[in-house]
Every structure is written in structure tokens, then in C-alpha cells.
Image (cartoon, rainbow, N blue to C red; front, side, top):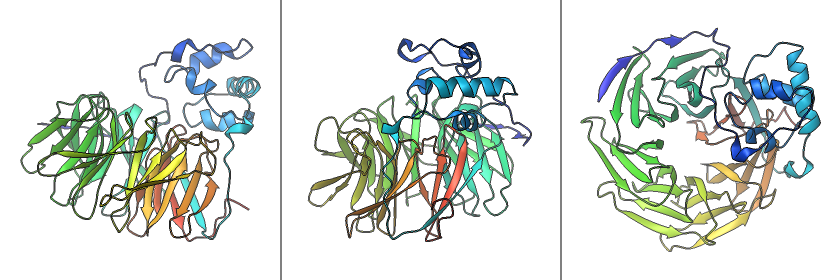
Length: 408
């Protein structure tokens, strides 16, 4: 464990950070045409060409709105870039979500975070009601006052690339250092950061347990971990491939979703032993899960386009097809008053979906920004949802039961 102190980022940092360029994905090439070199110069400094060719496509205005949340590009270059992308990567009809009517109303509010290109993600609600998020590519944590819209960013160790943040009961913000093998704690009052080195190379998602300990997954390392903040003691074990989402039920069992196999895991918080439950179809993969008041485990089967429910007492599993079909890619998931909320990350725009287990009825909305992807959701104390759009550097609130002014 060691401590460091880093300064708050100024709100004037509306520029793309100098993050390392990623390789082009699978040798994918951009079509020839005016604007090709500009795309390669401006876009592939932070992500591969596959992020463009694999998108759902947009018109010129949609492309411009999207890349303007990533990097500042002046005219006429911005117009040329948008025209090129719209010509070669137009909106794809097959990626449109199926939007279903229903009884619930929502209001969706989104904010673009100050530092562009940071890939904002995994927002949480702190004790004081502030919304915090992690800017993974920029190695920062951000704080938003949802009442005023005021935002403040805190620089974390540059090599950390934090994946997830969670609050503790003392006002501290904990994060998983996905690229520097650490779990870190930020004290927002002083800016001081305490780091705990992990054996796992890539701490991923985390959750606090009622016993006061922090439990986390490490996807690439295929490990699960437990950190005692009081003593700094770390316990880590090997597990099934690519553990991802993690939650705690009312009995204290720690539940793990696996993105590398068709399984859910129940971790004993004391012994660190894992009981595995196999989900039907060996191609099934699960990223996130949620827990209802009866301790039923709900999950998104991302590869099969389904949501599912596990009854831990019997091992029985039941699944329902998501409205937009097998390619809808359910991703983030949360349970609010025993109603299931999740997103269809394979669609453009990204769709927010509500499923009522009592009626087995779906309802859905298009996310206003829509570029994707919601990778995690958080339930606030007043029963609303915190969401984000990592590609377009947004965090947002879904207020449930409020008339939706974004949709007819």
C-alpha cells in the first residue's frame, strides 16, 4: 500500500488526452475517399478502425455529434469528417431497436463530461447525492452535482485506467486500477490517493459487502479478490474465465457473472469458495447481474439476446428473449422495486428496456444520445437509475415515474 496526492483537473480541459493509440482491429481498412486520411489521423489515435466499421452508422449530423464528444475538430475538417463517415458508414436499419410501449414513464437527462475522449463509465451515487464516474482512458474520477450540473475531475495515477468506482460509508471513492494492478481509494476532501497492489493484473468490477470488505473481479486474470480496508489485507483466488459483474444478496453471498463461460458464481465471503451455476447453452455469456428482493438472480445473456433469472434455492433458470432479438446484446442490468432494467447494447440507438416479471411484459425507450454503450447501471437511493454512454463521454440519470419529454 502506498499513498500519493494528485491535483484536481481544471474544467477547461476540453481536449483529447494523449492516450496510447490502439491497433487497427483485425486489419480492417477504411474505404478510399476524401476524408480517409483525416479519419485515420483524428479517430484512430484512441481506438481501432473496427470501432467505426462496426458501428450502427449515422447520418452526417449524428456522426458529428458523436465525434464532437470525443475530440475538438474545427471546421472545415469537422464537416469533411462527418460527410466521409456518413457516406461510407450510414445508419443501418438492422441495428435499430424495437421500441415497445408500456405503462411506465421516464425522464432521461444526460451530461457530457468535461475531458473529451475519456470514456466515462460506471457512475455511482455518493453519500451526499453527488454522481461520480470513472474516465477510464484519461485515468480520472469525476464528480457531478445533479442539481446544478457542476462537474469536477480528479486525476488518478496515469497508468491506472480505472474501470469501476464504488463509494464507501466515509465519503471516499474506491476504484479498480484496470491497467496498473491496483485497487485505489480517493479521498475527495484532500485529493489523497491510497493504492493497494493486487496479484491480479486487471481489477475490473467491485462491490462493498456489509462486512466492510471490498470484493472485486479481474476479467483477464480470471481471479476474484477481497480487500479489507481496515488492515489492507488482500485475498485473491483463481476462478472461471473472465469474471465480470459482481453483486451481494441479502444473505451476504457474493454473486459473480462470467463473460468467458456460461456460468454464474456464488462466492462465500468468508471462505472464498465459489459454487457455480451453469446457464443453458454453452455459448451464453453474462456481463452484469442484479438481485431482486427475494434474492432471485437476474442477468443479461449478452450473446443470446436474452435476460434470465436464476433461483438459487432450486437452481432453476428461466430466460426471456429481448425485444430487439438475438443480436440485441443485453449488457448493463439493475433491479428497481423488483422490476428489471437493462440496455440493448447491440442496437443504435442504445435502448433502455424495462421488464416486469409479474406480467412478463417488456417496455423500451431509445437513449437520447444513443451512441452507446451503457456498460453498468446504479440504482439511486430514491429508486432512479444512473447510466452513461462511454463512447460519447456522457453520464446520465433515468428518473422513473416522471413524464418522458424526450419521446412522443
